[in-house]
Length: 308
Image 1 (cartoon, rainbow, N blue to C red):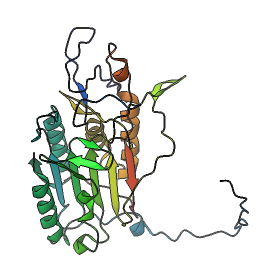
Image 2: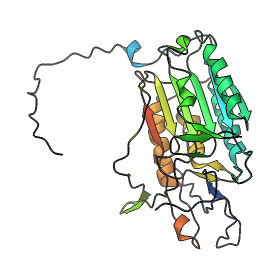
Image 3: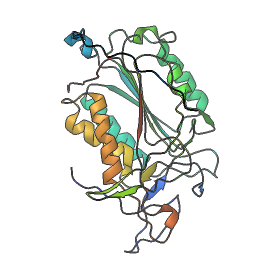
Image 4: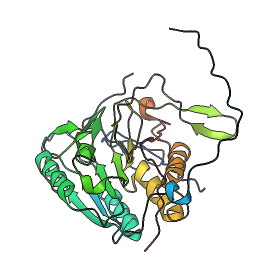
């Protein structure tokens, strides 16, 4: 895997690098902020010694992906915001274009929207939920914006991130019952930075954060891939796009029709964790910081795409 080490970072301010060029990495938080800084006895169940036959048939292992259409891919891209105090997201259009190209290569009908208000987002998601998806393989929804823990930003206000996928539960969208609903979120989830740890044979790996509590939907056939773990920054390069979307598109372009989606996302996590690092030596709080995506899955089968 080729190295793609990002060379600079700022929090929507111009910062000088060693070569006196402008830093191009920013965090997807709405404003300029500094990083924040009982045991029971359990008796083991007896081991089962008899052989248990594998009940899964090949058709049970993978979602059916041979419907008439692949499905819709919705991209909600936010660059500018109504509140002047919220930083614009330079570089997000690169993410949008790269995602659209990658998803189209797998047969998705891509629809992208720019700087929508929350009401417009909510109304459109409601309309899509009422559509007939019976001849679609799946649904993809992408949000590129600022965020905080449990929240995302529309053009005019912040809103509960869960509202993005709650429209597509089986009760709200029956024609997607039993089909994968895939959500990709590029946004910060807090203002902490990941220091990383040093390993002998690897430049760095992210240091896992203890005692994280994930609030996940209890619905079958959902996958939610966040660009970062709860409480932490998510980094974006002003010229090349966000670290997460760069890695996601790169892995899908190479392995999208050869590996299942969860395997691909594992290597997206690896690429973000190893190939990217912030560079701002004059600002210790933002220098040599790392990032790791977080994937929550309620999928019941494997997702594997074919190119068209």
